[in-house]
Image (cartoon, rainbow, N blue to C red; front, side, top):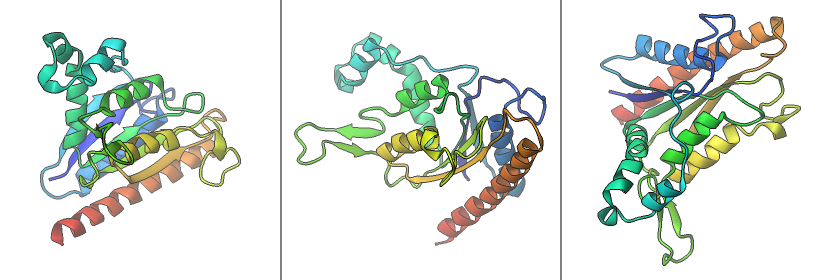
Length: 231
């Protein structure tokens, strides 16, 4: 059984496959999960988290105080402060594949998704810290978990991809990869739709290309997981 954590971060509530004003990133995550269910054998567990419509609470001073207090020394209010973060971290820890729909807003992920990252990149849960440790006092806690992160994005302009004309302005995939590498998730795949603001045939062609890439990615990941299970 594969555990999939399906996250949508778009402020748009509907998929562009359902509404002309819908979200392209939701379109891609929905397609990924649907194709996975169709192709997979056995029972698949899908956990859904819509941070676009229900964003996590942002990190506060009390959150930081609680997170950096040793668990055995936490007061009741600290446990309550960290309860939502604990739930989000538990979902990440349980997931084999994290499918994240993250549109580009002003060159970076939406604030809702950044709040989610701030809740799951957490000392003692997803990364370790020991100031007395020789060398680097930080270390990832999920290096051996064999997790895969799939980033499915959308952009208004074009040329944000590798070697693209404005690749340097793309802080979506790179910033997310930095955070996940830090906690030990290094297997990261991505697909994106571009030309959204142009709303012409170039957008339609980009949607078709991205959907085909998602279909292929599902096939590749299924094949990899089956080979790993058979080894």
